[in-house]
Image (tube, rainbow, N blue to C red):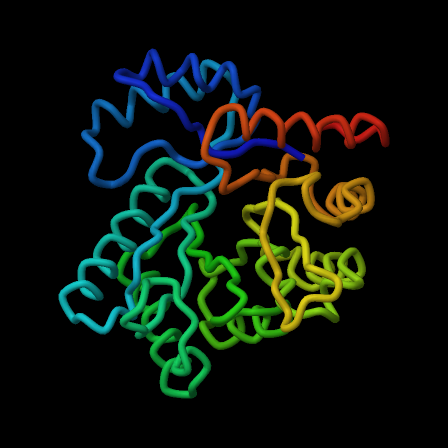
Length: 280
């Protein structure tokens, strides 16, 4: 697998960004540009990435095409198409978003409408519109699972893939986001293996992190955290991924805020991999 993440830090030029990339030791990254970036700057970033033998694993959308404000929803839909179009032009395999929500609270909020039949129909129509309008050949539009919106489990993801029914719709793996209840938390490696067994034909990119739950506090509170700060047995998790993913599959650390945090997470996962003879 290709271990990496998102390049963070301060830079004022592509050359400065390249130094951050080199220091990260990442083999795979999220795109540091968008469809709104100047073409010359995109070309410069791509040159730096190619020089260092790194793979762009995914380009994010992270906007809400289900927003209650029609203008916001339309802008998000347009941006998703632009990101997928750019991914296809550059050969980035995964253009990723969440399905979104009609909640007025936040673009990624839990809401009573998230699992209704009407919302599901709109999700299907929205994903189809994005793919059909762009008509990609190399890139795939993917949805990151979320604990409180579709898809919130591997079976729900498979159903979504069947219902969207588009060749360029694939899977983004985030098993921590699907560990959304005590049953999954208390037997996490078995659940993670189930996720990969069911979704592996469709997986284009994977996020990794960790999770923790207070053992006695009521009611259930699950917290995302960096690898090594939770309760996952990362040697078992790495063996699952090594067995069920292609050798060049990108596996991205996420949600750290600083270089130092990414470095600590990277070293933790890389050290675990080295102990069990898995190349990252």
